[in-house]
Length: 456
Image (cartoon, rainbow, N blue to C red; front, side, top):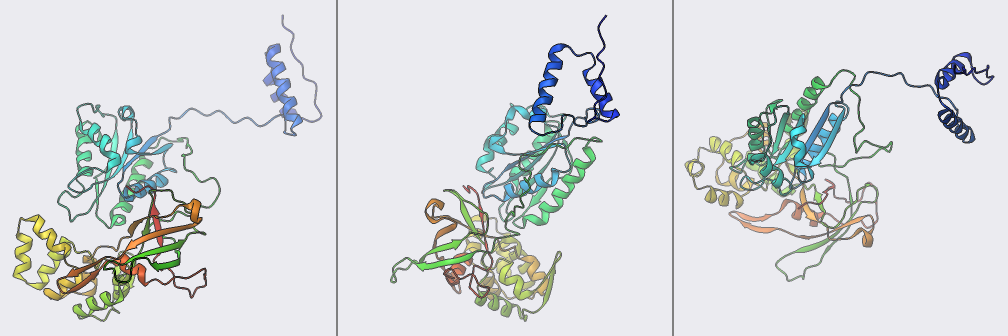
């Protein structure tokens, strides 16, 4: 008959804790009791209370695992995948963000919820980091996916014939493999946010509906550690100071090349060789004024696009493309200009000839050659958003510290009615050097900077 361990009253413990200790030690052998004794002594030596309240056991619940997979050439798809990942972290049990070329193909058959964010390049090609994934999914070795639920967001440029071909191809292929589509695939044009934001919202709604009751939340890899980090992106760019702006090409050279030094000391941003810096430019004032004059408008007209209200002058100055012409604008302008030549070009099946015509002209050229009547709101809505221009960083942080140096060749081309200058390469030479002056009156790159890591 085994002896029963009787614990006398302990002054440091109340009756409830004494009872818990008795329950804990009841029936333990000598080795277990010695272990508890040593464990308690160690806690006491560190000044930590020997006993802690034990959590109440709860029934095990299987966490909902969600995978966000992306393929990106210039960083746009990656940024939208990161936004989706952040939005889902509070909705699902486990959410992982994976680049397509790092995804273990053998895990595809075990996936339950998969979101794919992927761009299309050139003539319907996948981005470089997603070629292997696309080939696997579309190939004969792809597994049956009867238990998978998915949705696809494609990013591309509608001026290309194979607009979002890769996203649509994956969407159809996953369905053919037996997977169930959660909701319709998204087709994002260059104005990515207008499609991506509601698509991400729908993804969160569906994951919320799929999540089991009392599902445990597993901390994601990139959860903030308590430090407030600002994530700069093209909708929230960093306002950087231009320290040096110097011409480095000979005065008699036909090509103007400039050396720029940009201060990033307060941004918290870092870069490595191979990264690129994105510049948010503004259209030249002379170009904006000329376009407004051709429209027969004042520039003070108030225009609302979505939730934003700006003057026509403001929209054209810093928020809409005026130097890149696209087919959609030409189609809408042809309806207003009543020009047979425009109609004939649009009806022509020679895509190469039409693209050459597009690339040789800017918005102002079309308004000059084929006058047409526009309202301010319709005109702004027909234009594409003004996108950042990427430049390879020409410096090492080991040498320049918290700066980024660029070497920029100013783009000057002959247009049908005058010279064409690149919007960013024309904007940068007009920005004066601030030379360590950081007062509010100093000239800075007013539309700011943002870089994309490892742009290929």
